[in-house]
Image (cartoon, rainbow over all chains, first blue to last red; front, side):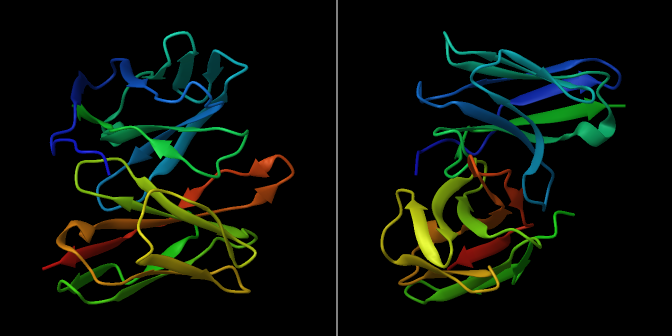
Length: 113
Length: 115
């Protein structure tokens, strides 16, 4: 696998603030993108997804933005809560399905009460 | 809770040994994918099984193999273990939809340590 350091990028925010987590994806042919949340000792949990024919999608307290020109994805979390503290991964897939997910390196979100 | 279960939760092996990890998929899901997650990294796709056959494989050597059973549960086998195989192994189950594989639901993983 790819060689990366053990230290994840970390984003530290105050409870109640908005959080923005960024991700650069690798494959210009990818047409489906997903954000996952992974808490310590657990598997990744689906948050929100977006297809390449959209540039924005909103869920409950979360918004995903897709910029295909620069191959960039972002996750915005409104009114961040302590329970949002986790590692967040973006993942990409192509062919209109999730058959083979390619995960990014992850960002650790730390919410200060 | 996703309904995907994995066993064992933790496992310690020595170099050269063989290991089998197990996964029970969520009810109604017929596709199972396996991922390896090294410490501090994102999960990496190993392979996927659908209808008891391998249906896609990532950049992993042949000593990583799998099975899927008629009840859609799955096994991951790793032969000739190496130190670098130490990782969290994740199983994800998903339904097969008309447009392809649906959302993947992950289990809690098996933590493998190779000494």
